[in-house]
Image (cartoon, rainbow over all chains, first blue to last red; front, side, top):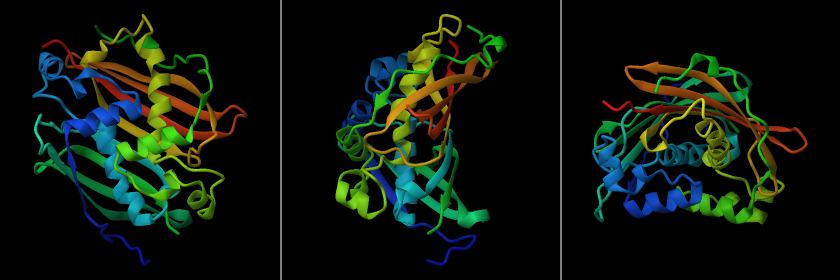
Length: 135
Length: 148
């Protein structure tokens, strides 16, 4: 695989429903009710139930690990949660799109991948960067 | 409530050992839709050079979040968890977490400030094996939204 600055990762599109949030809550141990209870979510001023930031971060990592082919090659991963992914209580849920490209080639065969993660056309991560070891 | 700057640098005693299980790794991989066999199939993981199945990179949060609760339950911090949203997250992986790891988490408050009525708290959780091998450093910035 030839990797240079500007090399694009294959796009990843994931549909997120309430059922996915419940499954993630159980798997991660994060049972904050803003991720499954509309009453609590709106009481604290959110538009509705939102996805766990870590769920979005986990999905976005898939675009990177699929591209490198090795989950252990992800050395550093940093995101800033800019805007919540609001997940309506319907079958359609919300769509999350992950795009990425190589932002820099670093020492020791590593590269920095800059991700752009959007939901319904809005950027949800205001920063998302991964440092990967290239094979 | 406003966070006290003197909290910065506060460190908590090491957590109890968290033993990483194959089933938990598989459950987590399924939850984020990750289908790479190195998370489920020991033979596939060994073929890829790992001693056992490895966890997806963000699995570290399972251990680090639980550890960071020690901060949220500190009476000097007193954040209302229902008002907490995740502001920022960073992982530095020294190596992949794998099944059979016996991890100990040490939590430190890296930053605490109040901005426009919101409390911003940054915790750093250092994950190491029981024998002291560094595995992952997980840094979380939590935001407790003010009662506007």
